[in-house]
Image 1: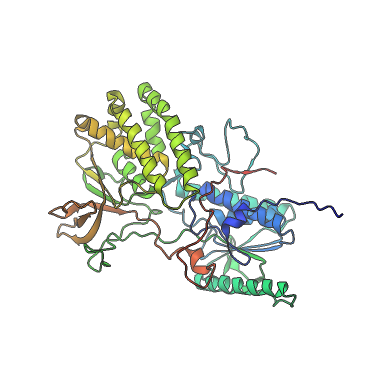
Image 2: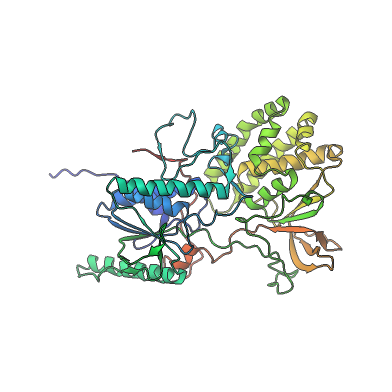
Length: 511
């Protein structure tokens, strides 16, 4: 009898990312989307793709952000000789360029874990696998840094890597910029159809049609910005073109649930410099709409005048009593976070958000009842006559990192327990089950927002008045680049099986 040996091939990343024949999407419908997640996801996908198909020698990557560049460099390391990255913008890491008021750190949101103490990547300090990690993109930082500064470090790292690849006698990835979006979108669709037909022909033992070839046309090769002349005939396509367009328009539906068509307000995108930390903003009426990470991060910045939440944690921990109280709460917070992530991997109902909100509220109230802790928290809040008002459509906060979620609940609980400690400081209000249903602008430039209550109680008699508004509704449905380029089936479906919530490692292990 013939003995067979079964070789196990790592393929979880390919199962979770495949969207069509020979097309994998690193951008659409994902749950873990930090810059660290993007890098690790890209590396694992390329590693597993090369293991699954050792003949891989030509790869097209759409998008030159962190995921796309990490995938390209990993492909070269895996021995892929023809790697092409196409980017609609004029440089890699363009989303982060020029953004100085948003701070990025690979381990910032691992708080209260010890990983949050160092924001270099892939450094792990004293972790058991220090020295065994691998990343295609690296940077050094003791604390979260402005996005623009990170982009500069990533760009310099990329230039060094490209030169190292040339010095080693290998072919570096070709990074083409200024590539038309519509041309790439059409190519990806045509590529998926061609590869599907080619696969069917092979199964039917017929000669497949030749593979599809991509011409660069008016594209330029970065960094020298010379015209791209060659063509690319990819075996596989990785989509890494971003998460899609934000919804920054304030009113979506009117009082009766119909599509709103009146005067409206459009705010700044998350990845842009806003005015929340400007001098004098502490005396303004600031209104933030949304219940996810972007909204909670803006609340913390506006109230505390700090760039990122780890600055707030560092301030709190200067007081020994508060530090001890936070340490005692940490195991319960970590347990809740772990259960939330695990539960989230097995359901799409978002029930874990309500549960972890309940845990954070309970722990925040227990801490707030300690007057010394509450006093230290109150001192985090900026002096001023202004108010930060957060409007959340649901009954609880939506998808948000534990650090942002817990700190907002802690500030709210301390204010409710000890209002006298807030004397002279900015006011903070959270309005659950409320949303904007109409907008107007007063003659003095203030924003007038009609608010609807969704808990059945009467609506406010007068419009809510704001000096400044931030809209954080997340990604607009239908704008995710990967989803626009490709679809699993030509038939529209409201259902899709996904592995997007399976957690990623902090880093890819060195092999």
